[in-house]
Image 1 (cartoon, rainbow, N blue to C red):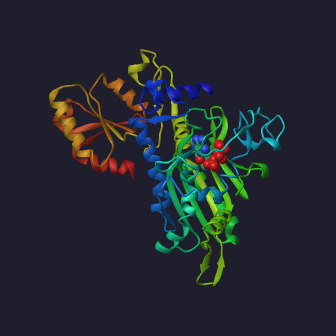
Image 2: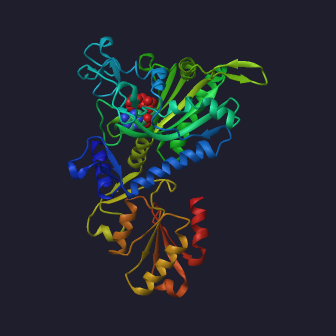
Length: 438
Ligand code: ATP
């Protein structure tokens, strides 16, 4: 199964999905750049999540907070004190423990531990021209705090009533001791987080709700059910702010690992920010006349981790080939069965041969569809080779223009998964694809 990981990494490099950062300088470890196809895939994931959780719901609104925040945010949140102790990290499950609380093995999985190090997971930098203590700022290690400190702004301006949520997608930085497994664990990544504010008595209900809801999201987007599971944290695994947490785990080639955490953060963060800022962040319920500090259920997902899971789950390799053109050459064929909504390229436009009338018609079709769908035009190589190039990046449809098209005004549309071919009138293509991508 490790082999599968190598294959996916190779595909990512070869097809410009993901590159090692700073490659021309020998690379920067655990930093990656998303190439032309990778950036599309990443955007699709974020857009679907946003549509699903923000635009498609009346009880959640969005936010895009600054990465740099007042340093007191991190004192209040516990990230400065909680992460400055001598720490050891388990080399296999990557959980961190205070060096004085563990012996020579990981108390969770029995794995080997790193040397103890004084360690703060936050990247520190300086704001302004003077590098002194007064100008220290941190790169945020979670997007969540930007939401908590805007709780009152948003509640008032968007006139939200509990239960409600605030969602954010953004860059996050953690100076991980042991990054690795390609884009699974890096020092710079993106999170998609919802902070859902509830009445303390309704915590259990919403905690259950979000576990189900988020698990369903991955399944709806095509991840096989048997490769997903929910795992409840043990008491000694919980973060300092959490009363309970469940991880959605994916069966990666190296074993089960976290895709997303759903935590009950209690009222820890709002209480702390009230205390440190001196501003009352409690909520007053107009109807019941009750005043309380809301509890928070937090589904927190990583963009790159889900992207990796989507790629791995979609990957299929057919030896000997599934098309006539490859059977004879005994080549392996790769097919990425990505959900249509995730696919970086939706439709490939392929003139059968590079002949003037076909190229002209193909370009006309390209222009007529380009504002509706992300397309790729390709006229280089045999048609079989071009189909395979599209199959391995997950393009759901290939549209071929042949000599008959000039006569009957129809083109061939080939389906990536079934390889079924339909002849469709050119002037009906837009409608045809709208139906397919609905
Ligand atoms: P882990 O136990 O794997 O270190 P975590 O429990 O610290 O993760 P959370 O704080 O719950 O992670 O963050 C929420 C999500 O952010 C994770 O489920 C994961 O998808 C993503 N994430 C966390 N750390 C990283 C990282 N170093 N690289 C990429 N994604 C990450």
